[in-house]
Length: 268
Image 1 (cartoon, rainbow, N blue to C red):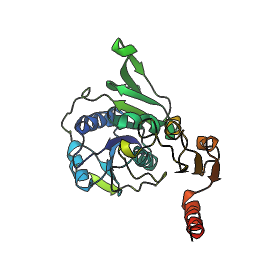
Image 2 (cartoon, one colour; image 1 turned 180 degrees about the horizontal axis):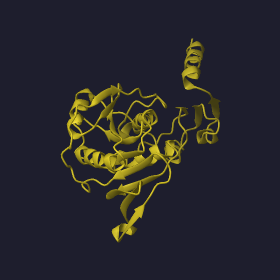
Image 3 (cartoon, rainbow, N blue to C red; image 1 turned 180 degrees about the vertical axis):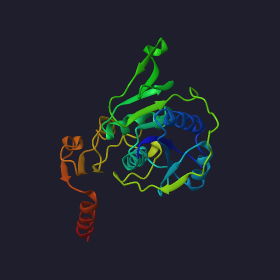
């Protein structure tokens, strides 16, 4: 299913303020590319009521990625939702806003899809079938035009750089639920007080057990005082094993139950 896919991360019970301009540009671009379908994926919590309103803006299909976590969905979960939508719909172009969490989402999604991206664009046009993307460069002192040779083409739009026009043909959008794979077990954000690392706390326990932690330098900085580090990770090449006294390679869902059961036995 070719066309244009829009990605919108929803926080709270309202659509982001930039949704209207994102949809307007999507409608215009889909027409210039030959009338392909315009779809959008909404990722967040309590978003069921939001999907039906997007048809009035010109969206044909809405995929609802509803998080069941008790906290706001993690960036990794939103990325998985965007990737699932892209693989299901196979669009020519993916548009998202260059702001907030989606500022990092775009490059991560392009990497997952093995394709190119242009960020912070201020104008789009189609010339002889090619998508021409305009953006400021060199701190805004010059304007450059880019094309992307791979597909899908991922482009993030600078907020308020595009007009929010009325939909030429309001319609009733087709709304579907999108199943999001649980790729990393992440369930949401936690406050910095519960994080360990440069942006959180520094700890120095006698025993520190990591489960599914890759061993990024920011995290390692927060556990440098730990006397004994035990690492459980299915990636044998994970950086955390360089700092662990003991390491187990495998799926934590299988290892942890046996580990806790053995601890109970040892404690009598």
